[in-house]
Amino acid sequence: MKKFYFFSTLIVAFFCSSTLNAQSCPPTGFSDGDTLYFFYDTGTSACVDRPVTVSVGASVFTLDDCGDVYSVYELTTGSAISPTNMFTADFGYGTCEYTDGTLTGEFLSLEDFNIKLSKLRVFPNPVMKDNKLNIKFDNVVSTNIKLFNVTGKLVMEDTISNSSSKTIDLNDFTNGIYLLQITNGLVSVTKKVVIMR
Image (cartoon, rainbow, N blue to C red; front, side, top):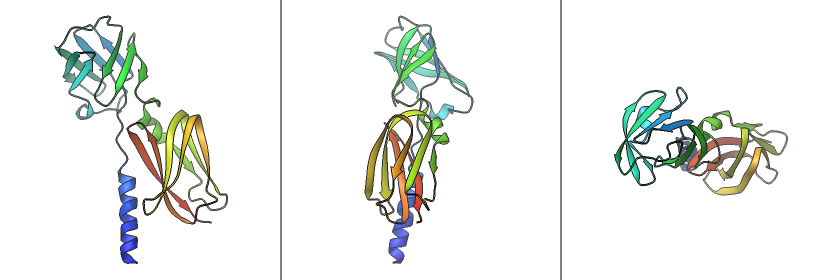
């Protein structure tokens, strides 16, 4: 019995600590052809987490200067960007499209997924009376959700499509600890859910 509790605790610790640190596109990006300039919101990205190189088509730009709210990349191989007001930058973790300096598209369907997930609400938790678990986002999302029992077995899988909320019926689940995993592309977050009816 001790081995089961130890294994269960280990699984919970693994899932709770395995949330990926998501990367997101800088909200502003400019180019003069030979140089790329990216600007970040304060405190959302550290220099050590930013890529050393960024590609635009066949051209490669290398990080030259970095600060809390900016990164400057200089052309190292390939030709200058033309036109300079529209380009798609490949950061290695995904692509980010810019038009006239503004982010117009990114590889994730959720804008700044890692920041938005901090406003994710899962309630009521613990589930004590009703058999419903509510998931609420700060904005409209499209993402996958999975529910695992404490041994790591997948017990439910569903999607959220263009909605800011989802209600899950837990009527068929026994009391215990579950792990709710919300995944979008390469980004994943796990929340512990307790059923105590």
